[in-house]
Amino acid sequence: MPAQEIPGYYFDEEKNRYFKVMPTGPHSLAAIKARKAAKEEQKPQQPSKKRKVSPTSIRTFCQWRETQSQLQTPTCLMSRGSRFLFRNLAVDTEIQLCNRSSALAECHSTCMDFTSFPDNGEAVVSFAGGRLIRYGYQCDPFFQLWRTGFEWNLRSDITSLQFGQSTSTQKTVIGTSLGQGGLSPAQIWRYSYPALPAISTDDADGLSNQLSASSRRGPRRGFVSTDVCWTAGPQILQDYNYNRTKDTFWSSSVDDAHNTIVLGSEKGVTHLTSDLNCVNLTRTKSAVFATKLLESQPRISWIGCRNGDVQLFDTRTRRSTPMFRQSSAITHLMPFERVSSGNQVLAAGMDGSLCLWDARVPSFVRPNHESRPLRKLYGHVNNHHRQIAFDVEPTMNLVAAAGSDHRLRIWSLSKPGDNEPFWISEKFGDGPVPAAKFMTSPPQIQDAWSRRNRNPPEYSYRRSPGIFVCAPSVDGFPAIQWLAISL
Image (cartoon, rainbow, N blue to C red; front, side):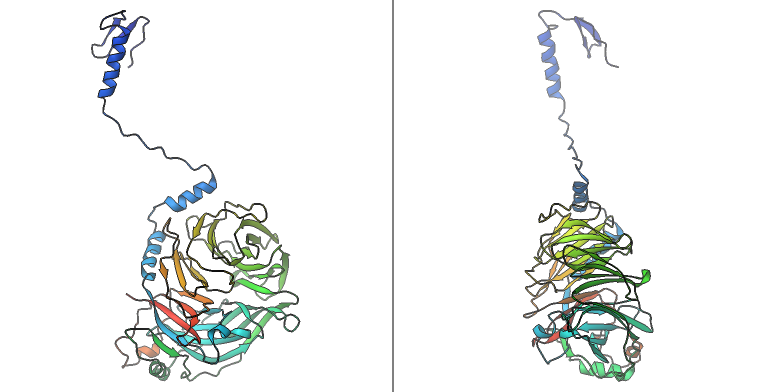
């Protein structure tokens, strides 16, 4: 208990008693102050505690959390493991699609999509002029594509392409066509057709014989197989379509489970049903190049515009709300609903910018003024291309983008503060590299391979993850390259 102060006296803690303050001697005011100063100097120096500066705003807090948080969550650990695996990507197989014209002429606007496990393996690939081809494919025991006899022409370049809600017996493909003025209006279409049957043992023999032997110094190289015997099949059915004159369709996002499609065009953003019935057209100040529906909120979509605006579009209110302004036209958008709080969206700009935004902190400023993102990814190279390879793997927090330098780069969002690509490919010839697709769950190995007794020992059955890339072959023709993990 501290001693009570008495005027004219001081308390000596060592002797535990009061003394009268004298004008001179050991009890003078000067002597008392000197003894106190000496005691203070003899005290051990305590380490000063660093004061933790609290963020001064929500934006600062979000940025601090993304760059400083080191929590070892299961998602974070899985993402770091995937980063280790994808550091070992290498070209495993190159399948040349055709040899009639160069990749520059055929694949400048290629779109593609692939089915995954538990499907047998189907792919759709578009070419210049609106030519669309359906392939069968496998990743194990080796990668190969084969023709199915399904090919159709939509007469104008395809700008978006994806598999819709499908079953084990029926497949659905949805896409958009650019249009050619009065000759061919812009169109969004929906095709359905029977699923491909499993390959036979004879088919497996033909596939195995066609592919060249593996080279230890390079990838396997081959052509699209024509040895699968069931190339003929039922006609493809066009279930629905929706077209519009004096417009250009740039992108689409599909959620058949909630009967919603969002279409980006020169005039704005259009809400359609899965049967392609137009619900409404919401006009925007600039063309909508990119669209992406949210999985957690299927009535809300992110849209990216030519003027760099990133907006939220609500199909219920029929309004789009500007949220952010990037430095150039938005080519691709992808919400990351499994990263951190699940409110982030990644936007790719035509100038090579890759920005991560937080939906809770809108920062749309005056027109012609760029917003400040939550995080920037560096290393992407792009000058003016809209149709370049871009894909994400949301469960692993991976981002892949091909630049105008014809190289593919992969970033990870799981490591705070690391904004450089952790993997960069070799140059894919003279380009272009218009499409890429992560494949983390390859199709199941077909039964025909287990019935064969003469499979070479080097054949793989590990269902390794990887990435498909549409890029020129070594001879300059269109090709699909399978980049697998090589350990």
